[in-house]
Each structure stands twice: as C-alpha cells, then as structure tokens.
Image (tube, rainbow, N blue to C red; front, side):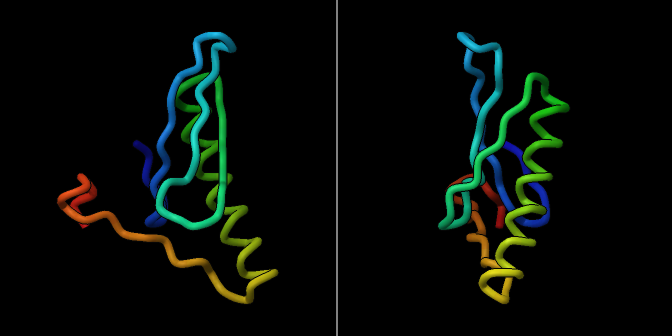
Amino acid sequence: MLQYKGYVGIFEFEEKNNLFHGKVFNINDLVTFQGKSAKAVQEAFEDAVDEHIAWCKKYRNKKEKHHTLSKETGGGG
C-alpha cells in the first residue's frame, strides 16, 4: 500500500509483463499507475495523484475529496 497527500494506492505485480500496476484506492475516479520497480511505482503513484489533483482543480474547480481509511480497514484514520 502506498500513501501520498492523503491518497492511498494499492498495487500488484504482474509477472507476465514484469510490471507493478495499481490504482488510487480512496477516490471515486479511476486513477491508475505502473512501474517496473518499487521506486518507479511510488513515483508513478505520486505523479498520478498530482495530475489528478490538478485535473480536479481545472475541470471541477476543486480538489476531489479522498476517503479516509478507518482503523477497521487498516488505515489508522
């Protein structure tokens, strides 16, 4: 699990393509990312979050609220 600016990313490794791929978990929109290493997937996740925030500000005139995770779901929020 990845965290950045209150957003949570989940990912898995796809052995066939030797690639990590994931999505931002705690928002309503579908925002995905991928990378070939742990560092690359973290950077791709952060870039995806930043791009999503910028898109929301431009087209929705606000930042989309992310859902916080409760202690029951493992988020400690």
